[in-house]
Length: 229
Image (tube, helix red, strand yellow):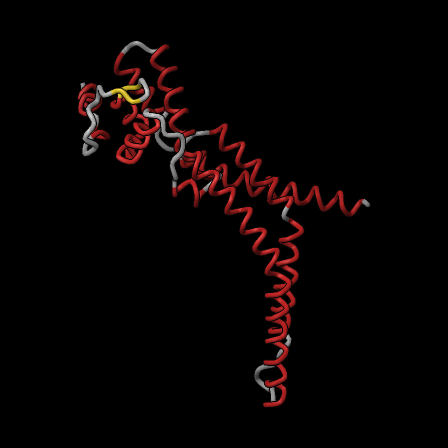
C-alpha cells in the first residue's frame, strides 16, 4: 500500500548516513526519524551522542523561544515547568521592571514636554542640557535593574537551551518504547510514532497565550495584595 511504501522508504533518513535498523539508545534509527521527522538530520547525531554518554548539548531554538519551544516539540511536562519558572521569575523581578519603566517615562516626558516649533536658541540649548541630564539619570538609575532582569532571563534561557535536547531524547525513548510495547502491527506502530512525534504549532500558540495570561493574572494578584496593606 501507499503507507507501507512510505514507511519503508522513510524519507526522514535521507542524507543522514544512518541505516533504519541502526540502534540509538536501544531505539531503531528509522523509528527516531519518524518521530523527529524533518529535524532528523539535526537530532539523530545528537541522540547518538547521548546514547554514548553525553549529558548535555546546546539548542539555539530552545534558547530563543523558551519556554514555548517545549510545547512546539510536545514536551509538555517540561514546558509547564518552565512556564511556571519564567512566570515566577517575572513576578519576582516586577520591582526591577517597574524601576526601568519609571526611568524611561521620565526620559520620554522630558522629550515630549519641549515645543520644537516655537523654541528659541536659548530654549533649545536649555532643552538639550535637560535632555542630557535626563539621559544620564536614566542610565544611572536603570543600569542595575536592566542588568539584573537581562541577566536572570538569560540564565533561564541558557538552562532551557542546555537541557532541551536531553529532555527531547528522553521523551522520544519513552514514547517509542511505550508504542512498541502496545502496538504490534508494523505500519500502525510507525503511524503512531509519527503522530506522537513531530511538531505542534497549536500547542506553541497556546503556550504563548497561556504564559502571557498567567503573568498578567499573577501581576494583578500581586498588585491587589500589595494595595490591601
